Length: 110
Length: 113
Image 1 (cartoon, each protein chain N blue to C red):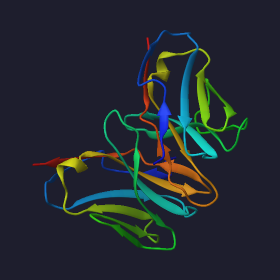
Image 2: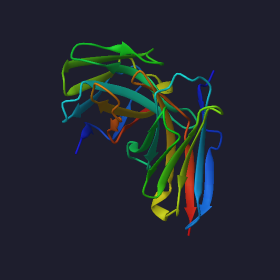
Image 3: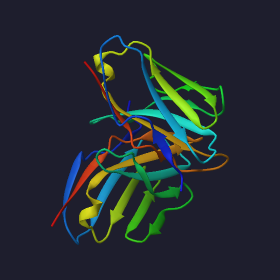
Image 4: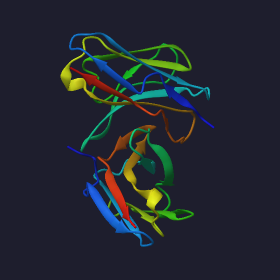
């Protein structure tokens, strides 16, 4: 039973537009919610996080939204740039254990 | 800047061989982790360690073991490699207490033939 789901295996967005990546989860015991970005042949790198007591966190072009009632997490990238093309994983932290989504491949079209 | 170094980027091994994957971190982190990444399955935790000589099973420990003799080094061992262990292996570390993002190495692509 998957606790964390990223329902879109891939997403294609025009350069300059908004990219929205989504993540749904099934239980409420998570303390932190994170997004990681992964390029081919590299390890994932931490992008942005949000604690369970907040509903929004912003860092430059990246904003993470948390809707606890809907058990839904999203990452907004505005404006999207070619270097944003990567696989994005959401990770949910409970007692320092991370539960991961399967990843969404984001493709930014020029 | 945290650095997590995995000793090999690519490995090709035969079925039945014993395989060692090495990972070293330079930030004095207490916690170290081994994951494997497979398409459509995300990152799955194999083993982790909160301290020297300490290990805990993750979600998929079968067929693997680990060793942490020094704080900076965490080794993953495939006792008898099988073709279903062909995967990308990722080592990560973070510190405690409190929330601390994981820092990953660049991964080892292991192929078992």
